[in-house]
Amino acid sequence: MPDDRIIVEPDAKLAPAFSDDFEAATLDPRWMVLDATNVDAVYQGGQLTLIPHANALWYNGSRGGLVYQFIPGDFTVSTTVHVHKHTTAGPPDQPIELGGLMARAQGGASENYALIVVGFGEQGHLAVEHKSTTDSTSVFDESPYTADAELRLCRNGATIEVGYRAIGAQTWTDFMTWSRPDFPNTLEVGMIAYDGESNPDVAASFDQFTYASGGCP
Image (cartoon, rainbow, N blue to C red; front, side):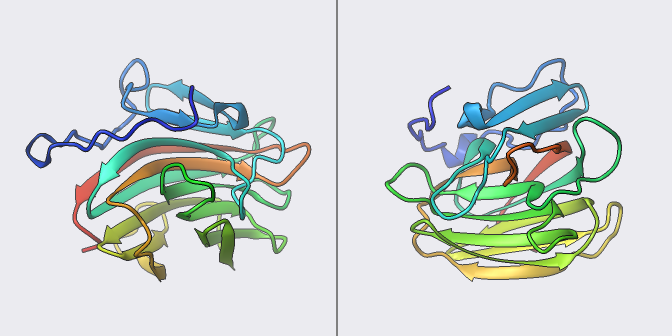
């Protein structure tokens, strides 16, 4: 697939239902793949699994894979993700093997995005990580966590907020908030999996993608 599609602004009165429970027989064609050479998207009813290729890294100007829809205006999206080894059971155990949610500005000469992910982080342990990249310069941090989580990413005007919680929990942990007035009205929003390994062993499986209009409640 091409790296980027031309944005068609949705009519506010006819906005598509961006949510997906992945229960259909095939993946809904609303989903598009950015840099399909960097990730395999494997779909089975009830779950979407992303398997990143070697050194498919979202950092500074480099890119991994992204399965996305164009989402305009303010929104809250969330997902349940399980990051695990691809070849055997168990969580990932190599640095930079992660999966989660991203909001990205389309095209341009540089990378501009925000993300929240879980998996095996840069600091040598399982972690939840946030990252904001402006003009291909990334700033990130991580905290020890598990490789399974519910993740949330919200937009409210120029403000982007990310959070996480244990699967089935009722309360979100607000992890990071950024001011991103550079973001256009419509963003590429969806699910990512990436790594910094020449021989990665990681996959990220997503149970659903849930959309609501408006920023974080």
